[in-house]
Length: 343
Image: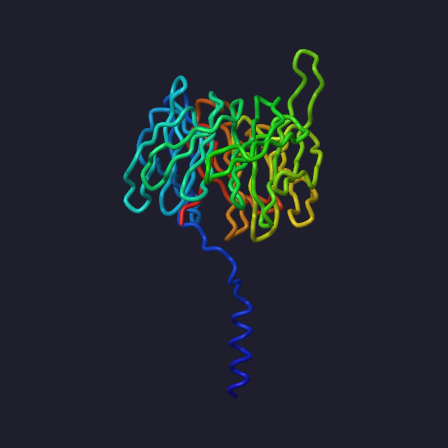
């Protein structure tokens, strides 16, 4: 009898996925907002998408470009008129803003060794910030405006998008704040970067349409292992949107996604291959502004511009399974360009 109970107990344990991450308690949507000062953050309940999203933490006085959650704090990157900008640090347990950190025209940030590395749209520097104190550290010059950034295995990778014409990914040493490598990736507009579960970095180049008769450059995915290019995957069109967070990765499923037109390109990150394209209903009328993936549920959260007035009217977040099937829709703010999950 005892052995039978042990077998049943073992089967019960096997039926539970111990590696599955905890479901998020909240979804935070960074809305760029209307005009130069209309940025907001919307809080959604992932268990009840029909409930109205609540505007959280008040006004930010600029355009919200990114939201990043770490250690029960939400880092809100706010772009102000001119070269100015800041990071507002929000304690998610109290809802209070505990700190504001001045940084130039912030776009995205990655965290490594207790510091944030913040890219800038109107400056050639990447700013490092000590998260414990909020003090900006050394600014690293990457020779042009940058966008996507990711930290993995003691390196910080920075994409020099250059409006769709850049070709360089910079690799920084987070301990010494110096440039470790400069990688010419062989495609134009490296903007979205994600790290997979094997220490490789996926660089998604946007490409660009014809400008003044110049050749069209289609999007491309380039996989880096350290500073070496180990895979190159052409895409069927431009990668990315009018937003800024167009790619996501699932550690649980070893898959990456990036926006390509009205679809998501879906990749197997174990074999570094393209699985195919996931068509998104209504994306032609209501373009995708941002992509995030909740590993607990395997659901994709897509920020969507308002179809009639993308820069002035409230957008939405549509939720899909990994095949693209619609699960639900929630209301967001104007231009929902970044999505983060709270514990």
